[in-house]
Length: 460
Image 1 (tube, one colour):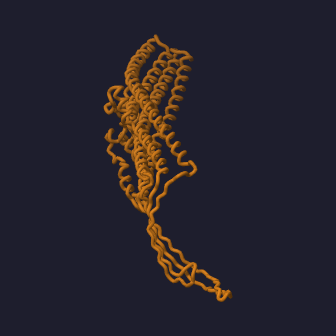
Image 2 (cartoon, rainbow, N blue to C red):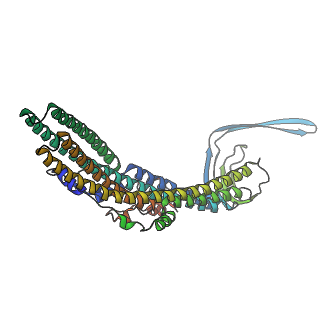
Image 3 (tube, helix red, strand yellow):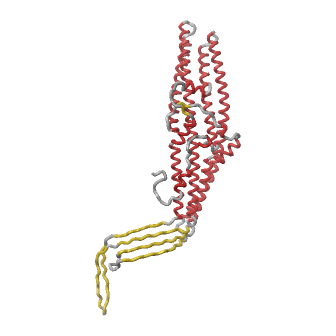
């Protein structure tokens, strides 16, 4: 029995809205908290760029000082060898304002390298976001198909219990007329109890699948409709799938950008050993004086250039450079590991998909054979050539075959999406989802050249 046919029977008469896999994926793409948290992480990473660019911009400080003070000054003078002392004391209220501006002209290319480092961090965060999108969409497909499978299995087990109940009734009737023994009745009762236990297990699995669906999709499920695999979006050969996976999987892209970040971190650390040049301009206006009662007003203005050449600062800069070089080596090894992991994932997904295709054919054949066998055993039991246990065994084999077919059909669909994720193509655009896709560049462009302001672009 096909999965679609089973589900049609399972949902017959249920007046609830229909849910498709596409609509479930749209809800997950919009509402999944893990995905929205990763989007927020990307937006936070975007702010690294304006922070780095601030090194190109001036720094301006305004200072005001005022208050009350008491001044007492004693001076000494000598006239004809006779010293005289004079004391001048009083109160005043000095007040001063100043403004200063400084601009870094050269800092060993640290600002330029920090900016490129921040931009690489942004690109790495975007690749991580794409990887999270793939994970969430694959989780949504898995949750949808698990619930679809468990819904069908519950219906199969219910039908099996109904058949076993009828089988028990017929066996008791035959026992009452002396056609079978008490053993046959006991066998039917045992098998019915096992069937009810299997139904309870199926209902428990269904409840768990509903909870998993709610967690990933964000809403309670309606009546789920069958879906089909997405083989058409994946490469048609294993070699091509491996090549595409290594080239387009976002995990590889994130690892490559992390190598760039580590390389630029080394350059930033090396820049601390180079000279720095800056210029500072300041203007100060004083009313009264903090040191003399006679001073009423004064002005100071200056423009000064500074050149700083590091000679030795205890060796911390050299340690930082060595540390960043080791981190760079680690990131390169991480990239190799990620490529190997992606290659393994693609090969494994390919094998699972091929096995799922073959399993579909095998379980379909098993269902057909079990149906024929059950019909034959029932006819032979009517003429006394088969026992009640033979009928019960044939019925159980048919139920098992149908459950295996449902599971195989679920595995077939999930395996096709798993391969699509492994090669880096599981995206709303590839699946044709009718949803506004999240574009991380929008926020980046909004904040990249922002000079001031505490509110985020969405108004927070």
